[in-house]
Length: 594
Image (cartoon, rainbow, N blue to C red; front, top):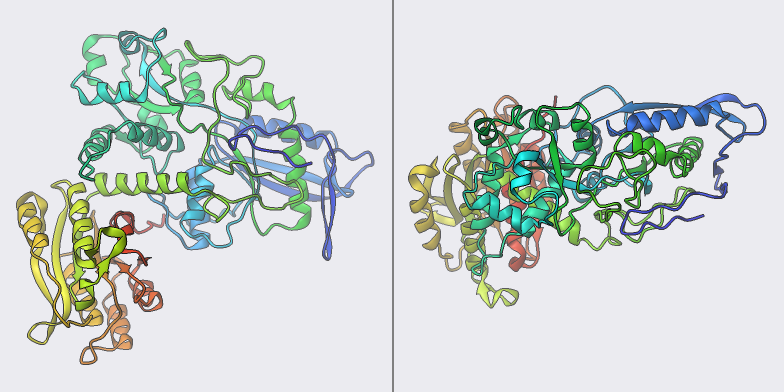
């Protein structure tokens, strides 16, 4: 029977066996087979490292009890897999990029069932445009709240365990010179760190002027204590209660309750306290994702295994691993951290209100029309801002100044397209620290004699030319009756970035336009693409990111360019929405095959 997710969390125990007829075959499972089975259906499961042993034990018990589907024996292989690794494989399979996630070239196949630590992985893949990525079920099989890990001596000074703290309290500690040194795993690679980033960002007071100075400062503070992996971050916590050691080490980081329980079980010199801050951040919800494209027999076997994991007997196995049940309550034997509530919320960003269906019918997928989109947008914006602020690049910004940029935008207070675009570029510039290199061009038709583009500021370090760029942006005005000299400009901009290419940075062209090529005297599209192919050097990659503004943009024309160069096309018909589009564009990073 269908199982409702409360806030994408609680899943009712399956109490019925399901057999569903389908076109040309069947879908169904039998939890146990009363008759001897023959043959084999092999189910491959990739589970987050911390839950994999419990899943493996449950699967082994199910198989030993005679797991079968319509008389065929079921065998289950469970492997421990970091969610970021599986996400990279799925992203590569579907030709999309995820922030901070490498596209894995591993020969190992995509699993039949993926059990990551958070539904945000499924959501991010959908939002990135992974067409055909429609995993079914999605029901939670476990949970772990996201807390803030703090060395116990430091936590005591903050009022732990008696005082209830908030994310605003933590923000004040971080920004007031209290000596609290935050750390984080790259939130694009770690779901608990992403939840912490969202919660901390929510505590930042909005800038009345629409800027992001406060957010940027917090992100740079976090980035100073950044680690690539959870174990690396844990190693940066103090190894001694000596005041000097405490002062020099990381002293606050978002991570799962399970990770703190696991860490403290090793009896470290300085145990970590788990601070349960208000409001509660997104919990890790361990969704059971049956991957698309599976054969009916495997789908049926996957749902049979799910019925075992959704059963009450699995709670004890979770407790042994420091994990809670999907509803946030602990099973027998759970080692609760000091100050932990007996039950925690399970608010997660996944399939809230959806009904995971053991027949294989897909629930409302994150990022789909059925999803509210608010959490998806928040995740996307948080990761885009993080990338723009913390990962310096080398960029040439190219802004359209054709006559159509004079058009008014009713949704932006009747400002012109040019004013809206320049304002968004200025806010983007404020995100970059002095480690960036940036240049600025404008383009139209015949802007400098027969040439369609004008260099306002050459590509150079922001440390020495930030003021010059700000002044140049303020002086941009559209050319009356000017057309859009797109092709000549793209080629010239690509060559300019290639000439000064720098290793260790993302070298890119970011072009903003409200039209399509109108220069009949310039090169043709065919010539442009051929020349870009000739210039492209895999050892010195340059990505072209094009932001289309308004309804006159030809997405197909623009995508023809980026398919050759790498990069992406972002189009908004409402210029007033350019801020988020611009943020995503400047944070785009090419996938790095391994």
